[in-house]
Length: 515
Image 1 (cartoon, rainbow, N blue to C red):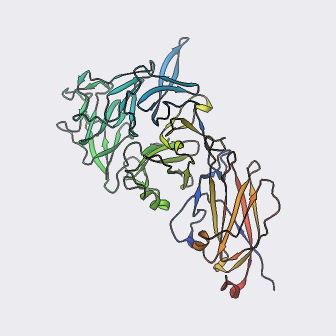
Image 2 (cartoon, helix red, strand yellow):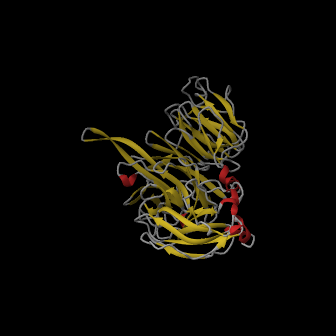
């Protein structure tokens, strides 16, 4: 009696990359290897798999020649037009220490903005209050007024701005209408807060709950750990990310506030290695690697178990890590950019599917140094911007079929495919179905004696599948396990995957011994 052909489905691994478990125990709907793909494909957002969104220039000009973009800000200022109060948005970027306004039409250098700040540091941050951005770069005390596009000295009207010798703050945020700074070399556990509503008042001697305050004031306390991140979690909670721990300040320090331990198992990577989603949850990159989520009043929860070894291997002395929330895709974007002129591997965490997807950019100049979520009125002005190493600002563009002139090398492995009890098989035919508007994909079939060997083996056969292909590939192969790799590395191409299957003819127990 002839053996019956078994049709093995080839679903897209919507739960992303997983390095956990043996090759033969690959978690359901996960993949052993992928790059530049998503479970929700970019163009339509359907849960069917495909190429990630590409990158396109937000404006055609570099911000400051080839100097890397160090930081971007968007400031909303209320103004009156014909007697009606409207919102005016100002977009500002710093590159090579120079401060400039930018729009899609071009840039305008701020008055006094040329080399006003540190020219090379990737750790240049700012906080906005009442239309003014106050900078922290470790060296300078500067502020930028959006409505006039002017840089000026940030001076104290009372007391003195925090300083230790020639070292100034490298971390800054706004919390409870105070400007909060920290990260001073030589005084790394201290924190400083301006008076409420006044970024120029640093007089700690005033006996009012609205006055300026610092961690080394009487009645207050420094952080028990070196501060590596300032996260304004809510109006009541300020998170101090530390070198190896996390603390939170609950309530205003001059109104009964206190500092409590949240975690002594992980800290937070230095700088902007965190982001917040619309519900208020904070995601952060740990000081020893790993992605975590933090909810109010609860210890951090690690999310990155499927790729923990990859994230733990990231050298934080040679890379800067920054996180951004992508609201359209419900993704946490993790950018791991080498400080040297080299390409990095970045990651997207799909919150809906709890899936990790690795991303790469072909050109070193495309590597993101900073990010900004624009909140504009026009559709094109509601996007995620990347400030890149080559001095350009680019946006994540869901219609782009490439990364600003570079092809997206996208691929994913489907499988391992096998029969029950891992009997040997012969492939009879392979069938794929792409989206109706999908570009062509290259498919490659691997087969062999066991999944790990197959993954590292040479291909049995390869071909090109189009959205209109109707004839199955009937090339024969034999094995006990198989993988299908699909993708493309063609500029101007993106693909969408609907489904697929491979027909396997069992070889029987005797034949299996020789596969």
